[in-house]
Length: 249
Image 1 (cartoon, rainbow, N blue to C red):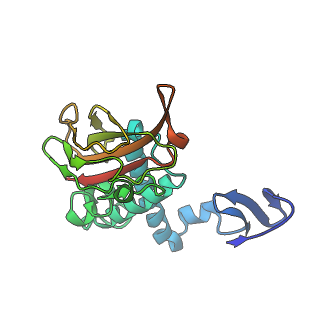
Image 2: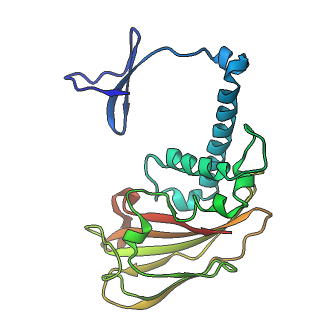
């Protein structure tokens, strides 16, 4: 893949060259490749078909997770979340050691310790990593989903974006079946605090224990706001918000 610089920002196709724009700038690539029909039918491409099938399954699992937590992730994500999460789901799929090649799945892989590892600690906004934003230890009760941040002082234990006056915390407790897509997300009440030197214990208790036969996943979200005339506004449309999958069982 090549990048190019020009007085003209070209997008589209010129002859055998495709020009397109991504987050990283303008790029160009040549047209061509093996036909779709050959890939689908030629025995020489059986490995390609297997890889494509498993990639599609991993991408679907990533979408299932994003949709299951849409109320959390809507304002705490980056532009490459879909691709990054699919990459991690591929690693989860690789932990499926029982299915035949081409049929390995996230739903089987995630039942193993090696399959859980790629998702534990995953940050949905790569521009706001939880461990950098929240500079304080916390505890998680995996039975209830409750998260406790003891002796928390906002002005000392946060990486505070310029202009932020308030911070909010939310805990999420999700039961998700990656095979069927069945989901149950329980959220804690949002705890909103002024960013000052007052210390307190932050306790985030989800409204209930989610039901279902899937895996249990736990989330912690930190969101920043600026208060103007008594009204709080999301800071820079959530660009500084952190959301992490802190654990799963």
